[in-house]
Amino acid sequence: MTTLRCISPIDGSVYAERDSLSPDQARAAADRARAAQADWAARPLTERIALVLAGVAAVGAMNDEIVPELAHMMGRPVRYGGEFGGFNERATYMAEIAETALADIEVGEDATFKRYIRRVPHGVVLVVAPWNYPYMTAINTVAPALIAGNTVVLKHATQTLLVGERMARAFQSAGVPEDVFQNVFLDHDTTSALIADRAFDFVNFTGSVGGGAAMERAAAGTFTGVGTELGGKDPGYVMDDADLDAAVDTLVDAAMYNAGQCCCGIERIYVHESLYDAFVDKAVALVKGYRLGNPLDPDTTIGPMANTRFAAEVRAQIAEAVADGAVAHIPTFAEDDGGAYLTPQILTNVTHDMRVMRDESFGPVVGIMKVSSDDEAVALMNDSEFGLTASLWTSDLERAMRVGDRVETGTVFMNRADYLDPGLCWTGCKNTGRGGGLSVIGYQNLTRPKSYHLKKVTT
Image (tube, rainbow, N blue to C red; front, side, top):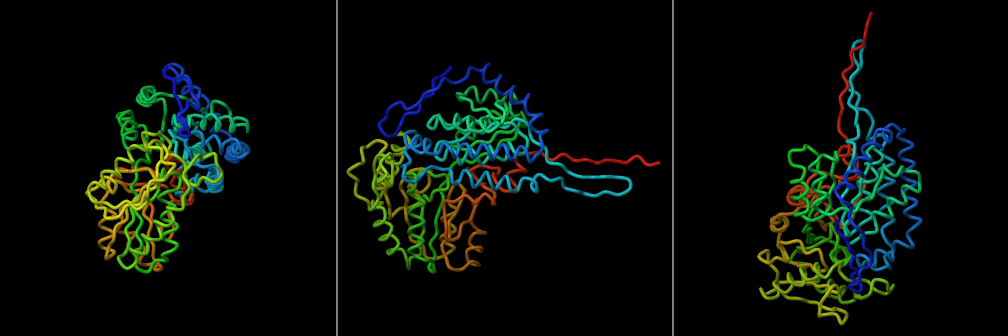
């Protein structure tokens, strides 16, 4: 048994701790989920939808408690109001499309045969959720998995230790049976052992590349499906015909919001040479106006990073880049304590030889490079081991579509960034992982096809 501790980035204190389940306790939880699954799947779809939406509403009713709790656990300023807007939007959309997305595919019927394909639940789904958007990332899978007839076991990140408890309590209070949606505290070894022992029928993991590789290793040879959303190094490209002010405002926010700890945050920006100087000047002025501080203070616009270890990696990337010739434009803020409270930084004179332009930073730093053509921008955007999103800025829709077709990414944005549309598949390529959440495709990944070839008895 391991004691899991959430260390608050606000002051380094232990904010919450829980004991992980023993292997026997963990197996028992998975067994309860399996035993409950058939009855849950047998309920009418409309009933499952209603219960899930009631659970979502119950989470919303807790929002006044959740917002400061998140600030304590992972540092997001209270001024931003938590995650319930996106949480509710995603769950509601998946509920709205469920009947169509899960409908039988009719292949044909005549006097002799009836043929169709049905989507049936996998069984027990393990959701391993990250700390950076702990509610929204979890609901991406929890809501459609439950609606589709699966039972769900949720394992949340230690940094956001209390989120899974709140979600399970809310859903259970709304009428979802306890064994249908369980929150568990597991250490890594127990999680891997359960996957290897086929305790789950599908695993959805959001987190690091190393964590995703560990999930796939655990599942090797079991034929258990594993969906992953892993690292990112998302680019923005500002073309010569872009709305400059809108590009600066959106891309800088996408790079710095949540202290840069966003799955699809912008980590590198390529700007056409005709707009480059003006873009940099405006971006620097914007970031200099940020207020770094305690996330419980409503005047704080950028809080601490979730962990001093994460901040240390960002500082190392910045220091290495500057040593190799990069220019840092933001003077150190007075509130920068050398720990979790980190000055947001804009770097120019960067190259792809620097880690800050190659490795995932996952912090409030962005490098900006000058480009002279779409071809050069595409080559640089694709020069990455990751592929989650790319943000293109232009007034020409056709141009954005042409460039987007050439970019190796899961999502192409035009004139926006850092947003997850539940009607579109959330997916990635290369080391960002595989699979897809939300949209109709999300339901396809949380179910399996079952074909029916029925020969009628004729007399």
